Image (cartoon, rainbow, N blue to C red; front, side, top):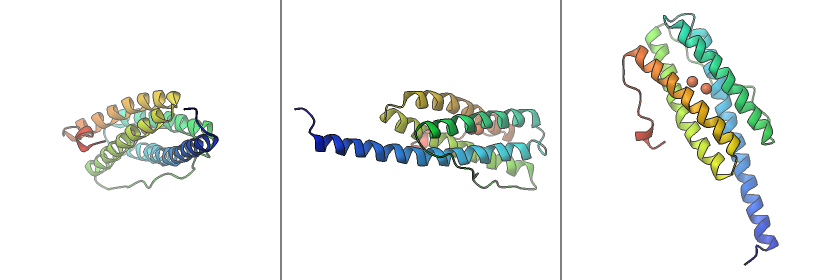
Length: 158
Ligand SMILES: [Fe+2]
Ligand SMILES: [Fe+2]
């Protein structure tokens, strides 16, 4: 049966709402990227794995650029506000903050990937896949520096 005008309107409204939700969520992701840029910039001056952290900072900036471009493409306005950056006198605590943030970031990007695919935004999902690969490397580097196992994101239902 062909779609009626009302049905078409309803499904257009539904996907419009889904796009708005995606934009909102991507802005949260962008705020987390800003947070990561700031954290790695500061931490790389106080921790003994400075080289690695500087590389992370540069990659987080690339992620922020990509996410901001995608928000713009979807018709949204990229946020200018980072999530709060925690500081500590203890180097180990700083690494821990970073590791926890990376874990939260990966969980969120996995969710975003599903949203993007559901809406047929395959360029975005492709970009997200590349970002997730790098976030997993960050997570791995931090866990290694802390001498612990990588947190199991998948096991937590993300
Ligand atoms: Fe990132
Ligand atoms: Fe990261």
